[in-house]
Image (cartoon, rainbow, N blue to C red; front, side, top):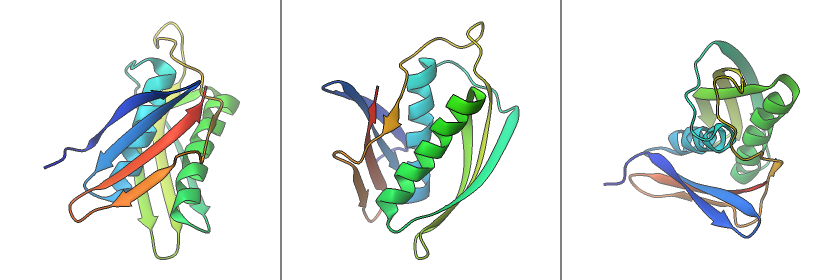
Length: 141
């Protein structure tokens, strides 16, 4: 039985995450957790600030990239880092409702990890199995 979670892997000048979850929604949450672990070098993040948004896409790969890109937007524009994600994924309509919780990135509290410049479609994998889903994504650093 596979456990929910993620692992990092290196790829040339990029860094990637392979996330596993009992559902595709859970795999999306895990990859987002992994992304902020990269940014904060695994620092603890408190759920003090909430950002909510909705995404509609043409396919599930675009939905994932847009989700992670929106979180990166909040990181860049508002210096936010997140640790908690409540996702409502409608795979049939290709819509994602997101509630992300986190706090302002603070170098007095959080370690400095790798800066993620963007989410790529390169080698993007989304697999749905009977008992779990896997998401694999590369980030430009």
